Image 1 (tube, rainbow, N blue to C red):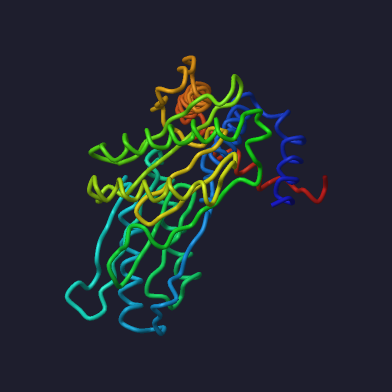
Image 2: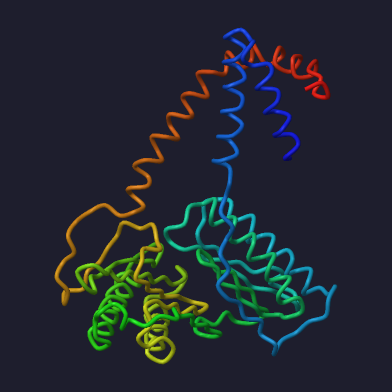
Length: 330
């Protein structure tokens, strides 16, 4: 790769300046198109959070269950391409070796990111839990699980917390816990009563300069009662696992909650508990970024479309000139 770039640099230095204007335009257009395509096609790698392999149920490799499991994981990955954020299915229902599974993508996740996350999770489950008949894996924006038994909503569970305490924010622990509990409970109420995603985000001011951001979600197939019970279990575990921490997550099979002192979601839906003075209105960081990125992308698309005619006419001349150049003489 480095050698190729070096040759291109020599090519430009020794030939482009002596070319007719139309040829120089064609080469500039080609390089612009190639580098812009590379930049915008780069995708982020899904961020792993945690996983649990249930050791109480194991299987041997190359069995009927393993075959069915492979079919299930393939089905989940395929379904994630259809702009679906939640999907639940069972493979080989009428056989002695059925396998149930589902995926859940975070409510603010775009379709492409959801698909990439589910695909990575399915592959990692096979690698991390090769013989277990029940397993679950969480990523930053998705969760995938499977089991040969009933899909429990509460266990297994995982908690993760920030190493820093809220004392560095100049707020008392009691006040922090009061604001945190109000935020999470308000979001849980909003999410469980929603008819589609069962997902909610919101924020509250801790101090004049620090904001607490919260997110809750449960799987859309849960009833109002089951969703409420899952949220209650997750919120109740926060004092035991993460008391006084600046950020934390509780990951359960049926639901998850998270809070941080920095923005980590893309939703514009905010909810302020009544015990807190409303936050001044303003655009989120995501909105500001999109304000700049969308016009840039649109301009690049229009520019690329406009130069297509020139590129078609000059491509053959550019390639011939490249082949005729003797770099050993440079």
